Amino acid sequence: MEVHRVCVPPGALNQTTLIFPDAVAHYVTHVLRLRVGDTLTAFDGSGQECLLRLTTLSATHVQGERLAFLGASHQAAPPVILGQGFPKGSKMDLIVEKCSEVGLTTLVPLYTDRTVVREAPERLGGKMGRWQRIAAAAARQCGRRTLLGVQAPMTLADFCQRYTSAPVKIVCWEEEQRTGLRDVLTHHAGQSPVVVVVGPEGGLTSQEVAVARVHGFTTVSLGAQRLRTETAAIVLTGIIRYSLGALEPVEDATAREGSR
Image (tube, rainbow, N blue to C red; front, side, top):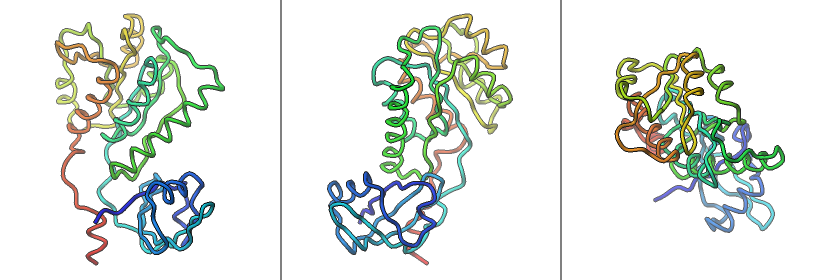
């Protein structure tokens, strides 16, 4: 039998009685259509998850009783950090959703020379909120307990400076003709965090690539086919996670908890 999941604010699971935020209460009541006495699990994005029983359910108030914390499903995955050049339209929504499902740790939107749209601060705040909600929904759907961290946008130069000490730093560049992604991941097998930069539509300029190289980033080719920026982000996250051993089978935490 499927157990429904909800995402709650950090620290909420420290209480034995949990009052759901309005958006979560609406989801439980009108989407899942659960009733008093039904059970579900709640996770807070930090790695904690627990089993709850609904005790109060109304149009404006949903409350649950914490029954038990679930055991750890697996060890924390090695961090993978993506610097993503701002794409056009709603493509960042797709990148956040799918990279969250695949297991990306941190996503940083980047302003680059070929960034088409630069949001006003008041609009950017709304977009950041939407991306965080998308990340939470993706985590709820795929069984992930930690949330993808969507950070505030920065310039490519600032991003490279911030992660200059990372052991594995990669820039995807269509003009690279010698070094492939496999070469770099094989050479740095098992090392993390892995930091990767994907440009926007049109890619990065040679000047931007030069800046990244100064900070120790290695340019890599993704092969003969040119991938869309959103496709490259998702594919790269999956490949890097696989190279770090993060896509191996794990014991189901819920099943383990129930067998005690």
